[in-house]
Length: 176
Image 1 (cartoon, helix red, strand yellow):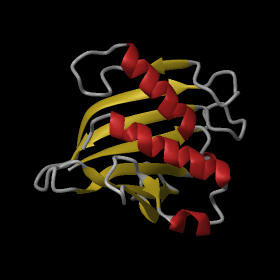
Image 2: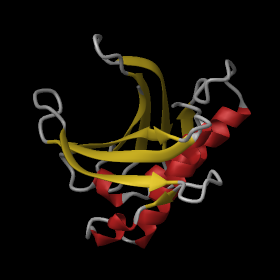
Image 3: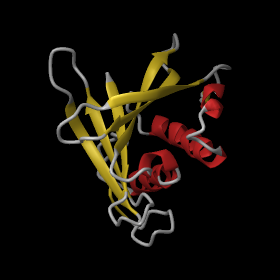
Image 4: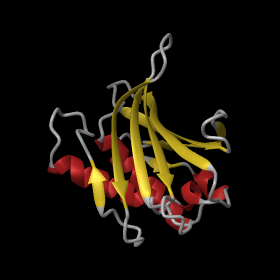
């Protein structure tokens, strides 16, 4: 199984996420998780938009190019809008994204978002806070978040739109 671990941090301590780290991880049942590739994006100007990035080949096509940079920029800009990731300060929060179900043609039919929190990043284990599913209910390749997201007070309309954008862009990483 493959998953994408998304971490946003407030490195400048201004109560706003400014650094986005993406970890592309391969999980094998009998082995520890393996970090296959990673990417980082930084918002130095505190305007909620990426200013610098360390991209690499994030879409797995063998080339680190403009398509990778644009994809990371769009994805990270959405991550920076998800308030849950950067508040409250002092907690380590992350989202794991993965395809949880494929259709008969082996195309993604569901994407799962698992929200984790850890109060002791170096000592404790990540605790699953909640999970959401985005699914392609009509079979047209368009994933929509389930309505359960609207019931959580932790997410406003802007957060839900950012999560929806993350899901659409995640599928372009070709990391299933």
